Image (cartoon, rainbow, N blue to C red):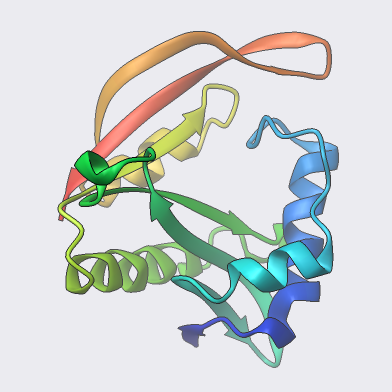
Length: 155
């Protein structure tokens, strides 16, 4: 089931996010998220994928850059628990997220995909995102530079 996240989901979302922070380069952020920080993020356009009373993934969107000129452009984050990979939950999360963003007046959505995440670009391409740029060596994690692939979808 895909549903809007609540503050009660923050612990589960933080567990998924912090695993990705500690163990992967799908996010360049080296600092783990606190439950309180995640709880504050659930108030704004955050969805969870719940299966059998277990949160297996989350997705959220937020303004792409600051300033009124970007008010119709957003970026998103999507992460799945390792047990949720390949089950279709990510596609359902993104469908709900894109529909919500469009209904909220967003015109375009960006995905920033780590070049070290082999499934990210094909996943987003299958959902209608197009690759628009590769930003070379903009992320730094685990003592190495990592490229970021930007993908865009008109909503």
